[in-house]
Length: 324
Image (cartoon, rainbow, N blue to C red):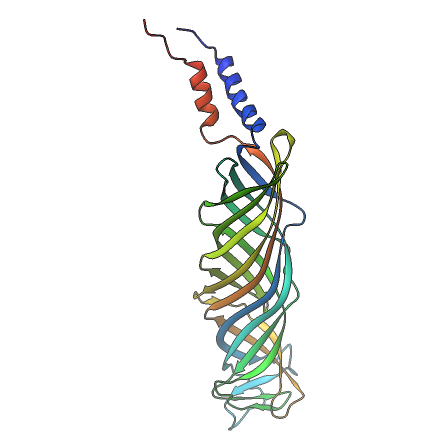
């Protein structure tokens, strides 16, 4: 029986990797990293977050004696220093269009002979962008309240409420994570180029910033089809580009307490003034619908198939013994 040194084993393992790279055009596992040009273009965002809590005037006897004071009810006395919290509800909404740059990684296992491409370990996440959205609110007070400085009366609004502006909003986090490997098609289109179509499922997680607070939303599994071009380059390298439609519906039923924030509430009776109040709200749940497209621009390199190099080294190091 021939003896094989430790050095020989290492050489055999290296040959296994090299052989894979040289034959990447026929079958290979590529690891890709997204680069410049990758991003998510969101054509529409519709976030709804019903919130309830209290508001109170920003009046403080010692430091802000000219601030707004509040008191529940639309009739009755209102002492000169009274400032009482009033129950309210606000249906927060975020809408608009925006774009984000993204970065991520994924693996693509290609089999030219079988016409098969397998996508795995796909994850892409927001790097920058997501600004330019607007927040609005449906203001509801069931019992009504009054203010001083300025003097105004907020009559009970009923379930319809009053629409009020809430300022700018943005998407501060957005991540798409593949749930498991997905198999698609691989079709030659030219010299070392292939049309790849893989339908997969991703979990979408997002964070929206509005009203100085964050709204976390998680989604049900969302279909995503990578329809793009794979180009095999020299030296075991490759590139991949694709555009995919994105239509995600997300929700989160966990209550979220927002930090207290100041707001200039437009007066109702009479209109035209601003009541400066502090709001303490708890978001009772968040739903979000996001529509757009995902652009993928990635560069890759051939990876050793799991167990391939080890198996090659063992086979070469320990050949069969001839029967005597």
